[in-house]
Amino acid sequence: MEQCFRTVLPICRQARITRVADLTGLDRIGFPVVQAIRPAALSEVTSLGRGLSMTEAAVGAIMESLERFFAESIPAERVFRATADDLGLAEGLFENLLVPGAGTNWRKREIHWITGIDITTGAARPVPLELVHARYTEPPPAGDGLFTRTTTGLACHTLAYGAFLHGLFECIERDAIARAFATHGFFDRMRIAPSGLGDRVEHIRSAAGACGVSFGLWLAPSSTGVPVVWCQSIETGPGEPILALPTEGYAAGPSVAAAAASAMLEALSARAGAISGARDDQTRTHYRRSMDAIVSQARQLIIEGASSMRNVSGEAPMVTDLATLIERVLAAGLGPILAVPVGADDEMGVQCVRVILPGATPFSILR
Image (cartoon, rainbow, N blue to C red; front, top):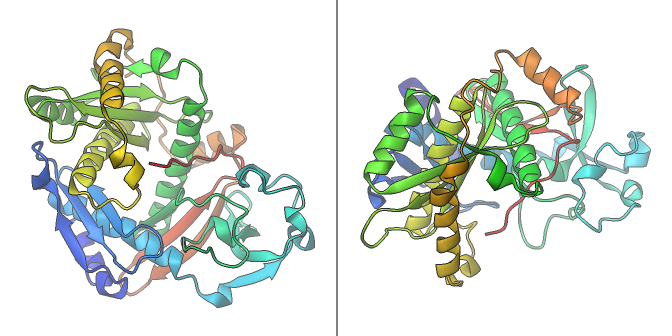
């Protein structure tokens, strides 16, 4: 991890990342949280990284910021204009990802496209640029407005394989969480116990619990069978809370234990980000609305809902190889699996990839 940090640090100047800030001390828990700030960003200015070491958290924050930098800087020569009908695209390929009200005539609109790769066949496939770029300006770029703005599936890594794998897991995660939102009785039926999920989960839970922060974990209904965990955290200790609001984390992983640990760390990093007041994806409405009812409901859900927990440590099978993961995604009807090389710094060895699952349930959240 130290070598990775030394590799990505010189790219910060090129990407116009002006600060890499340690937010750990803003909270009482002590797990490292780092924030990368890119003031000229065309999407989110701040990016959060978390981990069990400061270096791991710093690398995570920088990589997340680089994802958006590369996705904002796609060269014009890689883009072309056409209609879906002109390209002969199969009916229904991208319709699932259209914004509500986009209309049935979108296939006749000339829009921007970029070339991706069908992972199963290796064939080149045109992909709407709006599903790949992160130039989230107002007004939006010409031709945009058909698809939901999201960074789902956008990932950076020192290897293209690593970026693809990270992006694919994120697509699976977002699909499962979107399905969880639409599942009646999800919070009542899918609560899971943290016991038996390994040392990493127990370490996080114990350290946070000693500081008066409790977790709730739920297993999200992924049609792929890949473990996806939804975590909520809230302060339950005595005295005035540092942050009364609950925070959330989501993660997919090769095992329930891995997904749970990642989701818990994300929930804790969201705490630090909210405490800092620098998260530009949290609106004025989020901070102004009355918190009493929200906090009360969250406490009831996380604390009192513990009676419905079930032990799942041995239920969900582990995903041990990429071939199995791809097979599960396709069998679940989320495919085809499309990967778009977004950008790279070959000298420093950083690769950025956007993974798109046209059959996945769209997920977006407004705070």
